[in-house]
Image (cartoon, rainbow, N blue to C red):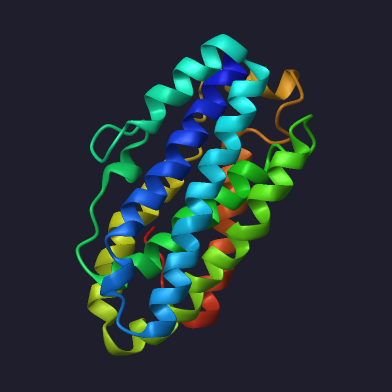
Amino acid sequence: MLTLKLFTILMDSELAAGEQLSSWVLRAPTLKDRVELGKIMAEELSHGWAVAQLIETDFPKKGEEIVAKISQRRMGNHHLYPFNQQFSCWEEIAIYTLLMDGSAEYIIGNFSKSSFKPLVRFLLKDEADHVNFGYQRIGLLYQVKPALVTRLLRKWWPLALGNFGRADSQYDQRKLEWGLVSRSNEENRQAFIKAMRSRFSKLGIPLPV
């Protein structure tokens, strides 16, 4: 079932994000960074748990099996490629939270007019803070390490765009027809691109073409 597939991927991605960030909490350069990243990590795991509860409630028997299986997944086996990536440095986390959580805002927000609105509202209340964590740091990082930021953007920009799914996906039209989403994959991707270009322009940072 399409709905179950979508929320299985969402649960896996949220838990994977928490896993990716976990090893960097104690390696954060300042106490403030440590506290804020620890909060983000906990919220990602909380999001995964919330989606798991929905899966178990809406799809009782099969849902329990899926939640048990996804809960055991670890780095290298997550559904989406970006969530199997290791970070090479602290600076990469700023890029990651800005772009990956930024794309999540649009992907999750696309379900805001569906019957899953309460879950969407819960997930989105934290995503903006995650995005701001990255945004507040990336401008300063670019001033002192422009080459590193540029290199990391080349890595994460296409990965963030890929999160939206293929423009010719066989499920895209079905999601629209069923009222699950209000925009197609490509419409949502373009809205994200426009918003991010505006944000990066204010920082004087060029995005990859």
